[in-house]
Image (cartoon, rainbow, N blue to C red; front, side, top):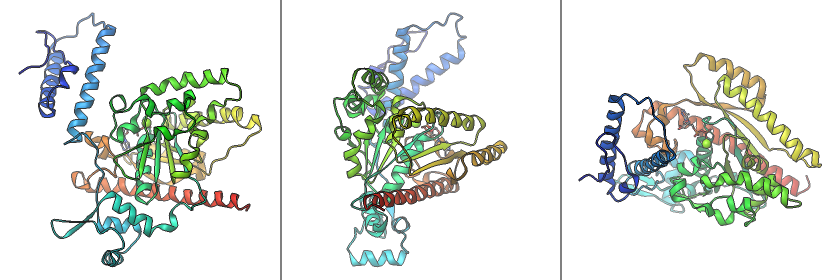
Length: 437
Ligand code: ADP
Ligand code: MG
């Protein structure tokens, strides 16, 4: 059986045909076809005239989409949906800050979910159950009734500095500690959306993104809130159509009086602030209209920064540009803006790279106490393809090197802990303001 249209000299992979095949056949055929294309590529000298037409590009783009869909099918078997992790008694006890004996006592009392017995003797708790435990045992860390969600933007206009990974990991860590989290993907590339198991081009309609908010047909993002595989985290996803916000916002600024393009998201999340405990905004690697919206909607800012010279210098440019913008949009209009916290997170730190310790010194000299006292190690954890569909909280530790996993996991846990402390302080500040302190 060959469902592929193939010319004798150049193999062609037809994406439309692929979707009719069963997942298994599909993947095997995909592998065979990829091997044949590779062999062709390696054994045939490239023609001098290797012009590419627009039609060639459309074909390539279709093929890439087919491969992505197929790969998701393989990695997220059996039904291409992400599944939340489950937790052992020890893990739940650690999240709740309980000793094992205290945990056993509470299980006996039967006031909290008791999990499922696995092979008759090991207890396993679902994500929902674990969150119920966290909310009960960590009640003093939960959002006070009269406080609002703390909004945190993860930003840096360099790509590949682990913004998206940080956003998702933080959302999962905070949710595991009992908080109700909303994540908003403001990057048209939709990497965060993908990490939540939704393919931007396939699973997300334009109406599910913040686009309608940017066009002004909606005033609140409530319409776009979508549940995720991770109970306790909802998402406002993104897809490529979100790029048009970069035209819509400046055009509205010209045509609508009293319009403030930089406050669209800030006002759009007002209702969500009363429903969620934390709102996390992932941003694109540019100081775009959408990123400006994210920054000005936020109470806290986290800038992941690998200790490399280029990343350090570009972070300086980011703040220069941001300061200019803030002066234009805020200060010069007689308004003010402050953040509850701004954190620089040393990310993807390679302990074998001699230069990184020098750059780390520059970072500390420049950002002083904004630098979080933790480093996220560069790890092979995410180097495996399937792990790219998840984070340390999604990864089953038994599938990878235990030490590598532990280092990355502990570092992220510490980040979550430090951010939670700042969230608690921000809630105190909010309540102080309400009570006129
Ligand atoms: P950004 O959103 O800033 O572009 P991403 O979060 O998408 O960055 O991360 C960029 C790449 O780095 C991804 O391939 C991701 O899997 C990888 N990555 C994330 N964290 C780490 C880490 N601690 N060590 C090594 N690679 C990482
Ligand atoms: Mg990203």
